[in-house]
Image (cartoon, rainbow, N blue to C red; front, side):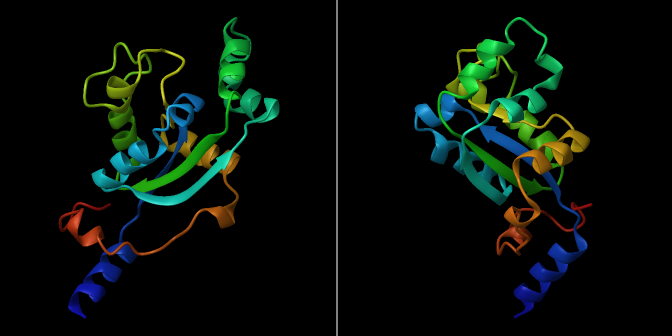
Length: 169
């Protein structure tokens, strides 16, 4: 009973950050979905939402608005539509930075071994995952890919074993 009170108290008093991860077609086609999700979960991030979806031209133009005028955008968009993607809402203390560190450099050839891209990618474009680059972009991107009712709040029984006392913000 004490552990349940401790876990519930810890969770309620903790403000967890959420971030978006897209498992790209290169991940889906290579059948790495489970392995990549497992890496995030083993690190201690909580899956708050997950769904498979086919990306439309409209959502790609919105998501990559900063790249739409670049000459490589048509190839990027076509690549992102070769199969469905898996959208993940991940939650944890400093989730955006933790996920960015785990994913590694955008170019898989330059990504450090031990990172997701360093272990599974040899490409700048076919680089397995997209990860939000800031908390403000994470909020925008989560709204782009998830409706409010598709992101879940629940108490993870392992939270007291992931963070030490006072580590949560």
